[in-house]
Amino acid sequence: MNIQQLYEFCLSKKGVTEHFPFDEDTLVFKVGGKMFCVTSLSDWENGKPKLNLKCVPEKALELRAEYEAVNPGWHMSKIHWNTVDFNSDVSNKMMCELINDSYDLIFKSLSKKIQTEILQLES
Image (cartoon, rainbow, N blue to C red; front, side, top):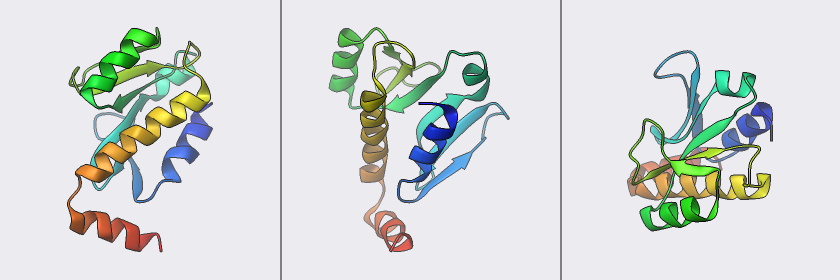
C-alpha cells in the first residue's frame, strides 16, 4: 500500500474527512469529527510509513504480542491506540482490516443522530 492507496481507502468510507489539525505533516482521517487514522507524510517520504489506529484494548495487546509491526500508539493513549508499521510483518490485507476496525470503533462511538446523518449523506 502506498500513501495514495491509503488516502483513497480511507476516503472511500462513509463520512470520512481529511485534516491537518496539528501541523502540515500529520494527516488525520476523521469520521463524525473524531480521528480514526493518523499518519505522518514525512514518514512516507522517508520510507518508514506507519499509522496510528484506534483499537479495542484487549485486541491491541494481542496484536502487539503477535506482530513486530504493532506497538503502543505513539503520542496517543497507549491503551486505545496502536502504531502499526508498514513494510513489516503486517500484510496490506491485515492493515486494511485494522483501518476498518478503527473506523468502525469510532463510527459506533458517535451518537445515533450523527451516525444517521453520515449514512444519509452517502445515500
